[in-house]
Structures are given as C-alpha cells and as structure tokens.
Image (cartoon, rainbow, N blue to C red):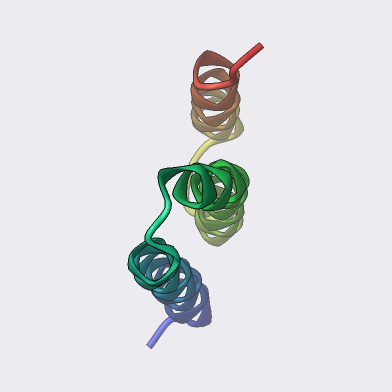
Length: 87
C-alpha cells in the first residue's frame, strides 16, 4: 500500500481521536465556558490537519500530475485556508 496514503489516513485518524477526546472533555467539564475554550483549541487543529493531509496528497501526486494541475490544487488548498480563517 502507498506510504503517502497510509500517512494521510493516520493523520485523519489522529485528528478524529483528538476530536473524540475533546468531546469527552466537554462532557467531563460540565461547563459551557470550558467547552468553548476546548473548541477554540480544536479550531487550530482542524486547519493544521487539513493542510498536512493536503500536502501529503500533493507530494504523492507530484510525479503523476502536471505542474499546472499541482499549482491549481495547491492554490485551492491555500484559498480554503484563507476562506476559513477568522480574520
């Protein structure tokens, strides 16, 4: 199996574990304020995982796709990150 694919899946699995643990912390804290703080930290994790998985995918496709298409894909990833930023 492709090592890039395994790495991408592993990153998503780790991300889901982080999200699941955060949900358990929400319930454990029993406070909305604490849950919001935890959620704010999760807001940092999501884009980092998205960018990492996208980067791995682009690296895996580097030899199979033309440079123009790689630039378009990379630009799309950057635009998603810009579009979802809170600034």
